[in-house]
Image (cartoon, rainbow, N blue to C red; front, side, top):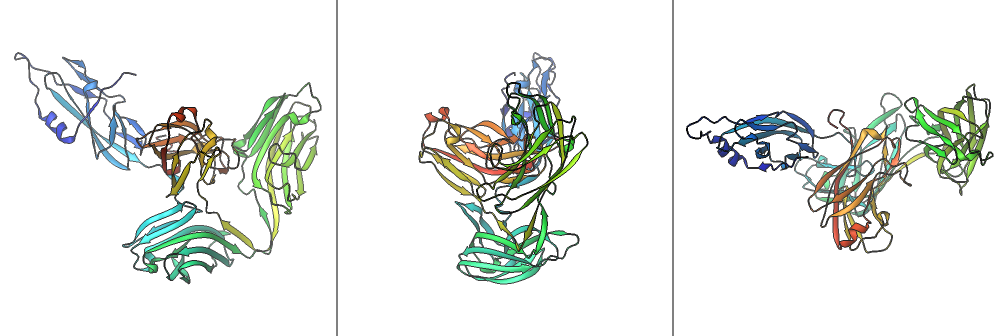
Length: 553
């Protein structure tokens, strides 16, 4: 690409330049230069925009003078060699001005509309909680700080000035009991609001304490989304540490469908060991399809060699009875098996369902109860037998019958540092990010890494972009990935990046290899290339998972 020596000047200098008049040579009239192709631009905040794409400066006497274009941006935004990054949402004016060899000048002004992507999730909210302030109060800390969730605020005058809020999905008509275990720097009367209405009153003690309150949702339909806020403004200036939280409702005996809203998207993986074929989710995620095109001739009895894994995303509990059902059909009458097991390659098999004659669709239902030693991630493995076949599974349902109270514990998790060679790496966390010091680097990426808390990605992974800001005291290479939580593959995103002293915003596109499952984010810093550096500080902030913009991305 042609190198563009673009000069960026202040508005004052640009105005002075444009005030000059074209002068002729030896009494002849000079033609003024023209800026062609300048146009209004829509873009995403903190992404790189080529302001010179399609833009040229032409002069009758001097020819192509595009490298002499001067660019002025108001409000100010960082521009380098014609590329700009707009840091905040809003409208900017971009002025292109150019001067020919004898002082003749012209300019064009366009508008840039920078918009924020819609945020799906960020790591400032912990377990769904968020701290907010109003009135004259100031929120000084909110988030995980070295393993503790902290809401710290100053200047509370009335109760509503400081709030700790979370949105709950609750079954209507049940009497819920909420329990917050905390440590508070101040004591005083607090209130609980449910969708803005006072639901309970309590006293917050100084030091360690437990707050318990009840609420019955009465919305229309089966469930309601209820915003519940603990109002702390009466405490004035307070540092409120939430240690744990849970909510419970009476249940009696009921059947719970664990696969409500389930799709096969991102959950199907082919196994080919001496065989050929394919496995994939079909019909928009409604089916899992195994296409076996050959078998292993050297091991005709090895029916396990070719098939498809299905990750249900469910973690089984010891002693709990499960009922699993599905519909299945095949192109030919050859027998095959559906194995219900723990993990992908584990030998802990809960049940093997033998199926034949499935050219007419069959419905199968199985009950099984994991023991303490083999409970865990629930997988299905469809193995085709010693035959070429096309096998389709649909309508997968997994249910449990539960009794007693239904308790949901809210996880309050932080970033986790792994330094497997004990090189003295240290980390502090704050406000949904982390600061890392690495005295010396390992030679392998995973030996020094930071992992985020897990998050659930709803829908196809290709609908999302992961963004974060990063800077370091020396240029370091980093492997950034979004693997399956508790494992690695399938990986939702993977990219090798270089973090420098100049803070950058990184935007990483996600693939369709994820969705409807739990993932986490991983930054890996072990690398031979990094071993020339020592005592490096790395800061990662503003970590978000955003929806792709269908127009601009």
